[in-house]
Length: 249
Image (cartoon, rainbow, N blue to C red):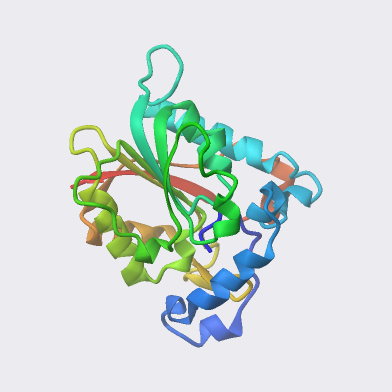
């Protein structure tokens, strides 16, 4: 269920308003059911957003924004930037980000993705390391594992707050202690609360909630910015997208 998907702006949800903790509504089986029902292509991964008028370039704009963000952290393939040895993508889906971004700057990428039909085509490809067909909440790396970059995008909404903190703590433990970076890229709630989406059984969080959970996981933000480059006349259709680079406190 950890494929990647931007989201359109929310309308009021009486069910979520009735509860103080929208993440209590998350149902793993319902999330898996949704992701097993979508197509194995970029449109499926992006929730159909590229088919909306004026948003066909969503994937390209997203990848460009991510590439630019990493360059500001000194990571990239261009002169003056450094490649990294080993990366992990959490919630990789069909590998849109792994193939479109990570393999261009990393020598090897491991993948976490519970939906096997998404990862079948990735197994055995050059640069693809281990494929963990489990959810983020079930990922258990080996003690000796170490990553220079851990990228997780448009999927932590399937985790409860407590599960997200645990996942981040696990990422912190296997991060290169000298130069490793954890990146979280997610939609932000446009309301004054986290919002539950019954379509794929996920939660969209506020920026303030993310910052609180990062702190609970003993991580600090070293850089953050909003995704740029989307057509201005269509911004009212999409929620803001923010990317965070994290390091241990």
